Length: 102
Image (cartoon, rainbow, N blue to C red; front, side):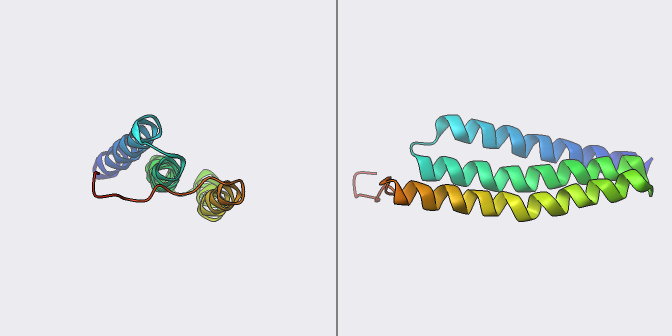
């Protein structure tokens, strides 16, 4: 019973973060803020969802596979975000400077 509750809490929190990241992609003003919203919520949201799924699966081969997926995502998601930001800077997109009007 406690495992099921903890699993659903992780699944709900991960789902909330993924949805918040999607809203951030639509609502935020420029490329770099959108990239930040997507990368942070994608990494943490996916980790929480996979943790909730691992709790539901118990200790099995499926759990090992889920943790390998999380390890892969924790290395590739920040790397791809960094590559996108560097290519945007190289392509001439500059971060928006904060002004006193903001």
